[in-house]
Amino acid sequence: MIFHEQPTAEWIPFDFKLLEAYQILQDETCPKCGHPIWLCRSEGNNVGFKVRSAICYADKAMKEYESGKLKGSEKRDAQKNRGDWGRYYYTEPFNPPNSDAPLPTRSEYYQALTAKMGVA
Image (cartoon, rainbow, N blue to C red; front, top):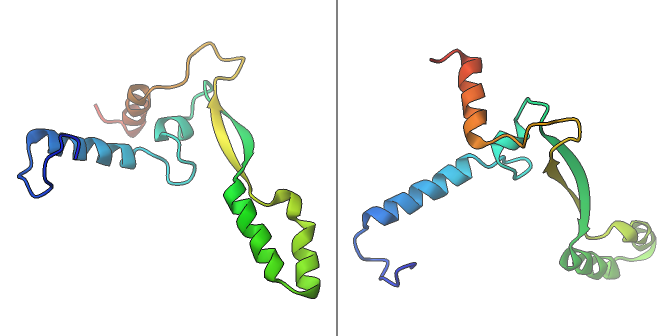
């Protein structure tokens, strides 16, 4: 697709490299928070997380639509949480003010993990 070739063509070395890079990206992304694992699993003092919020207006519109279908007390109960419709929370990594070191790198994380396991 990148080189505008038919997908039935034989794979070239670049295809395999691209597939491997994608697999590494998937393997090193935390399934819980979506951040790189070397940030969210770091045990060092040079990484912290701020909790942020945002609104997904598509989700908010869906909740408004769904509440319109409800009747009576169900509708009143749903309307009570209207201010939070579409709101979701996520984390953002940051370097704490008391830390002189930058955010950990992928290499540093794997070196620390290797040292922790006692592998030479």
